[in-house]
Length: 217
Ligand code: AMP
Image (cartoon, rainbow, N blue to C red; front, side):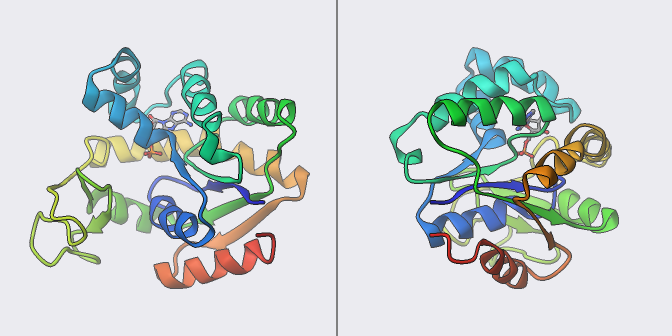
């Protein structure tokens, strides 16, 4: 069984790799950021509360994140494994997640940290475009769609996330360094942490992740 966490700064390519991993192993891809963006689009109370923090590049409070993450993990499709992308992001979220899983006789099996140089992260985030419909990711320079502004996969409209602007990106990277990086030490202790070089091409990053997961299907 694979209960995997993808760690790494914003722009590390977690979303891109998560899509591929979830397809290969047939496990649901759970992105708390994506769940929040859906709530914002639908105008729910959760969405309104989360948006204030997201627009500034800050973390949404743990209590709210844990509520939505645990609700998602209780859905039936998570019984045979799952992939977490962008959650946990604080040591408090991680320890609550461990308790939540332990109570259900489950545990995290793999933690993959995708490591990328800061300059590359900035370039990737500021040039990133996302499909409004299917969430496929593009980049204006390195991975443009065939038709400008249109998703190759589904024909949906591409947009720039409101938190992918230069000022917000800088803050998100600082927040990552101060609040999320300590998670590496947390998971190092459990012996499940593997570091992957995310400066490489996406195909190579994916191959290295598969190799790290090994035969634990
Ligand atoms: P992401 O799509 O993972 O880059 O997340 C976008 C934004 O959603 C983050 O910058 C945070 O404001 C918020 N967010 C997503 N996941 C979490 C989390 N686990 N903890 C706190 N805030 C989160």
